[in-house]
Length: 115
Ligand SMILES: [Zn+2]
Image (tube, rainbow, N blue to C red; front, side, top):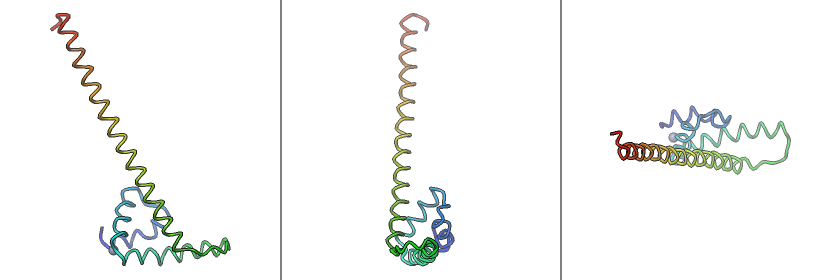
């Protein structure tokens, strides 16, 4: 992902509008690119500041909130990855089971003299 693409995704990220694949690429870029991370911090600060002024909560740890948001996004992607791996494992077991059933059935037919 280029810096230009990442900068375009800052606002959709803050508004939780990115799909999982795009969010994954965006987070990977943010990890390694200080310029884009700074861009995210600026927009996040403005957005969060406006939100908190509206609510008037008196809570102003915006950088901490952003890090918590990034951490939650990473955990969400990790959870999705774990589910994907589990699904692939289950699919593989199903295919192996069906193949074994066919082999055993063919053996039964062969023993009965059908083949
Ligand atoms: Zn960048």
